[in-house]
Each structure stands twice: as structure tokens, then as C-alpha cells.
Image 1 (cartoon, rainbow, N blue to C red):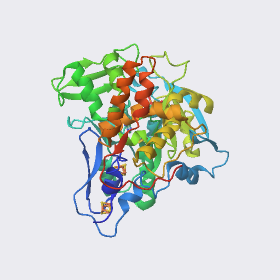
Image 2 (cartoon, rainbow, N blue to C red; image 1 turned 135 degrees about the vertical axis):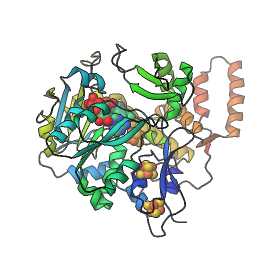
Image 3 (cartoon, rainbow, N blue to C red; image 1 turned 180 degrees about the horizontal axis):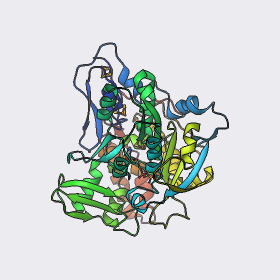
Image 4 (cartoon, protein in one colour; image 1 turned 180 degrees about the vertical axis):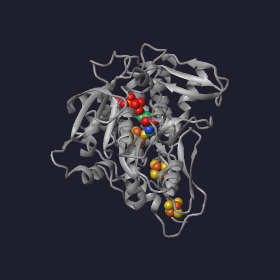
Length: 464
Ligand SMILES: Cc1cc2nc3c(=O)[nH]c(=O)nc-3n(C[C@H](O)[C@H](O)[C@H](O)COP(=O)(O)OP(=O)(O)OC[C@H]3O[C@@H](n4cnc5c(N)ncnc54)[C@H](O)[C@@H]3O)c2cc1C
Ligand code: SF4
Ligand code: SF4
Ligand code: SF4
């Protein structure tokens, strides 16, 4: 049987369900479906062509493919006066601001700059459509990628969707249609997959004119929401919509979520429900724990929340934007849009400061997770870009091990080694005799006693 993404990527836990491989497959052999954790994954229907490796060539997690940093270097490295930052990648301009229109600002995730910027591209005729995400009438999936062609449709799509979505259908549609020019909004890994796909599909290369990224901390799976619904006493499948960051209800707009059930009744989350769920490692994709792209390094521009002391208490929201493409600079500085924005230039230091915890997690703690992968024999994408300046020491690695092991166990990747369990029991027995010992440290130390549960041989790990 020929090798494809299901065997090479999904089986190793690297798939984030973007859907790009499925859209490109010449046999329509791949479909994107939900697994037991409520995570979109690519599945195979057994109709693979013998000499084909297209799906692997477009997957950002395939070890033979260039990573986001290498792709970005080729894409942007030669631009005059472009600068590069270890964490944020390439940039020619940094902006901070929000739309003046209060309705849009309320509807948007941060300051609404992304929607205003996209509308500017549409209104000026730079693109014919914008591929972005909106609530879906199909309650089985809740959200979907679609092509927006008007400002009103962009308004409906404003706001972030922290929920599994996939783009195979929308990509198949635009690849079958008469040629037009599109901008696409996406999380970093989705846009890297599209960039790789553009190299393989001349049509996709012609029609995708701009890629607009969203900074990404991680993507929650559906179990995350099922857990919150349980807390609200609602059965799974009883929801027709989720509004993330509901400004109208909460003073702290960054926390509140509004669930609407099939009868139209609304339920609001409490911080306690959400906070407890958030702290658990079970509720994100494994791929996100093995990912180093924060600032959508292959995108022409990237937007994020202004997580800065001066904006933190602002309940209406401010966006930060980093631009890498000269053609986009005029939109970055405020021309040609229906929704005007109050904007100013900002510095790369502010941009980096706004994402400090993300950098800590996806750069520094990632190094600790990679060490643990090696220790436990768990595979990780060998093309991963690791740019950490500071290396984690033994204590950092031990600290990270509890959460990471918890995640991997919940996903069936690791199983407890019975001998180490026995050792922990013996040691705990001793601890109760000698109360001076620090229980936490001892448990942490022996938490290393795991083994990889998959039957296949893990790939050779290159990083030392
Ligand atoms: C899963 C996820 C994790 C994020 N993590 C961080 C983070 O750690 N730090 C941070 O500063 N910002 C993060 N963001 C980005 C942030 O939430 C805002 O999207 C960003 O600040 C832009 O806000 P805005 O008001 O300018 O955008 P808006 O004007 O609200 O426009 C957002 C646009 O993005 C589209 N969109 C929404 N969700 C998705 C999606 N899942 N995939 C593709 N397109 C989508 C919408 O359709 C809309 O067109 C994350 C976003 C997502 C979806
Ligand atoms: S291209 Fe996307 S959907 Fe396909 S295997 Fe890779 S991550 Fe998964
Ligand atoms: S190897 Fe080719 S035919 Fe097989 S799933 Fe991948 S793209 Fe499709
Ligand atoms: S953390 Fe990485 S893998 Fe996960 S959704 Fe974000 S960009 Fe993709």
C-alpha cells in the first residue's frame, strides 16, 4: 500500500485536520472527519494511486518538507529593508489599532482590524473573495470555511473561532471554479499547508493572492467544549452556536462564551468552568504541543490580540498587526476600506511582548517537550523549527513532563510502565514514613516511567 498522510502523519499524532491534503488528492481518497477526541483528522478510503505522494508534499508536518521558517526565508528573505525576529519571523511594518465602528469592534475578536483589512482588499478589487470562517447552519459542525464576497458577509464572519474547522471543501470548490483571486485567513499551520500546496498546484498558486494569519497559541478540540457543556448541564449535540468572547455580556470580554441551544435558549459560561477546563492538557490537539509557529511565519500579514498592559483592561479590544508584504502596506496604513480604523505604528518589541506566554510555551517549553519525546520514544515532526536561545534544564523538563504526559496518556500515545508504577508505590510508601520528603518532586521524577504505546516503530529522531 502506498504511503500517504494517514500512515505518516495521522498515525503519529501530527495531524491538525487542516484539510489541504484532502482537497489536493487527485483520487478524492482522503476525507476529514472527527476522531474520538473531537479533532479533525485525515482518513483514507483505500483508493490511493500507486506513484503518488501529493498529500505528503503539502503537509507541513511531513519530515521531508521545509518548515515555516525555511519557507518564509525563501518567500520574504530578499525583500528590501525587511527585518527578521527570532520569534516573529519576517516583517516590514508593525501596527496597533481598532476599527472606529463600535458594532464591528464588538463583533470582532480583538479590535476588528482583520475584518477591516480584508474588506479593504475586497472593496479595492485586490481580491474577488475572502476565504474565512463563519457560523454554520449545520449544527453537526457549528463553523465552516466559506468565501465572503461582500462586507456584510465579512461582518458576519468577524470574531475568532477557537473550535475545530477544516478547509477541504472550500478549497475543492475554488479549485473547480473559474479562476478568481482570493485572500485566505487562517491559523499558521493551515497557511503553511496552503503555501506548500501552492508549489504543487499552479492553479492554487495563481488564485490565492494573499494569506492573512492569526497568531496561534493552540487549537482546542471538541472535548474541551463538551466538558464545559457538562458543567452547564447541557447534553452534547444540543448546541446550535457558540459566540466566543461575548462583549455584550461580560465586562471581561476575553473570557465569556455564549452557547445557544437548538431551541434558541442562551447559556453563558462562568470563568470557573472554563478556567478549570483550560488548565487540562487533554483538550488540545497533540499537533499543537509539537508546533513552533506562533506568528504565521509564511503569511503576508498576521493579526493578534494586544495582550499589553496598556490594553488589557480595554473591554472593546485592540488588534496588533505585523505586515510582511509591500503590496499590503497601504491597507495596513488605512487606505481603501469601508470601516476606518484608528491605527498607529508600533514596534516589534511590543508585538513580542504581547505574546510572551505563547513564546514561552511554543519555543522554550517546546524544547522540553522534544526532550521528553526522545526520552519516551514518542515521535515528533522532524522538520520542526526550533529556535530557542535558552535551553531548558532538568527541572524545566521535569516540570513540563506532568502536563505533557497527561496529554499523551489521554490521547493513548503513552501508557504507564507497570514497573515504574510499582516503584512509585514503594517510594510513596517510604514518603509516608519519612514526611520530610517532597512528594511532588518524587512523583515528578518517576513520572518518566512511560513507554510509547503505538505498535509501529517510531521514526529516528534527529534533534539532540
Ligand atoms: C484558535 C485561535 C488561537 C488564537 N490564539 C491567539 C493567541 O494566542 N494570541 C493572540 O494574540 N491571538 C490569538 N488568536 C488571534 C485572535 O483571536 C484574533 O483572531 C486576532 O487578534 C484578530 O482579531 P481581529 O479583531 O483583528 O479579527 P476579526 O476582525 O475578528 O477577524 C477575524 C477573522 O478571522 C477569521 N477566523 C476566525 N477564526 C478562524 C479560524 N479558526 N481559522 C481561520 N479563520 C478564522 C474570521 O472569519 C474573520 O474573518 C487566535 C485565534 C484563533 C482562531
Ligand atoms: S495536510 Fe493538514 S489535514 Fe492533511 S495530514 Fe497534514 S495536517 Fe493533517
Ligand atoms: S498518496 Fe496521492 S492518491 Fe494517495 S491519498 Fe495521497 S494524494 Fe491521494
Ligand atoms: S498551535 Fe500550531 S498546530 Fe496547533 S493550530 Fe496553532 S499553528 Fe496549528
